[in-house]
Length: 461
Ligand SMILES: [Zn+2]
Ligand SMILES: [Zn+2]
Image (tube, rainbow, N blue to C red; front, side, top):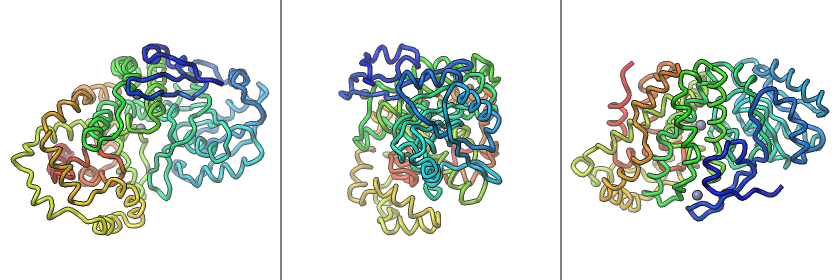
């Protein structure tokens, strides 16, 4: 199936379901692609799956992946409908005594081994974790993956990435996009309100994530597309206004949220990485995942954490941009505390035990020798005002984000998700080690101001 050529105006203005399977030429010089063939949003649409699959030439037997513990009821009725419509299927499920299934690469491998040679495509029935496990399994088998979503709990369904873990370490891996996505409003409206609010928190991250992307372009000279994140401008107004309706799970609220998460994920697909939707707020959230893993505590919903971390990230931008850096930062002092690579490795192994090696492999990619780091810091200090002028075009006011979170009923305090103040401060001071990507956490770390910033912006609860 050939991609339809669209103009960027059309991509911004057409309904989300109509911009699938398209490509467009962008002012950044690239041709961006949306290779998802079909997105269907509506009611009672599981009945339509077979017809839609026929129309995009997906034939043969399906391998269905789901999490029995969470999805038993939904899955049973969905599978019955699929079978009635003529889809033959085999099922693979995850059963654990307690807790959520983790998006471990190992889980995808097991599912792929189970289905190898027996099915022609995979159907994920579930939310974020099941979708990502299945996308990755589909890539291992080289077969298409379709999704019947059961909760509007994050923005990754339409993304070209799978947020996996390997031995607990977060890895955002490039995969093929889903071939078709079915979002049935009736099913989604029945998902727990915590999952709905998690989806809301995830899309609110746009309030700072684009700012980190811009910051990285200025400091690290990385790629930045100045137009594609406008793809969510229209939905942004709608979902900001619909905070209460989303929190109440009204039909309109669920429709707006579902459309918004689908659109939001496309920004990652278009540039083929998660940078437009994942900045400081995601790094902090991933750090909390790591802490919970190390402390053997239950994982929180991804988007719930992102929602709590987003106002923090905005406050970190505010703190840093207002910091009297020329008066207070001494390169001589920074030089004395700067870690050599080997020292950094030892620090990570000591602090994060068996996760330290995985972290080092990530952070090593951006780590500079002092000589180069010094030039980078000098560049940042010399261009201080112009950097923040450019970056602040992409930072939303913190009061606005906190207001919509409160109106939706989403958790807003770190204590709501069982975190201690020390842990939050730790995540701000050391969150930069989690990723190879440059964010304001790196800027603050490099300038030696991250502890000051954390102590200022994290309230005593
Ligand atoms: Zn572009
Ligand atoms: Zn996210």
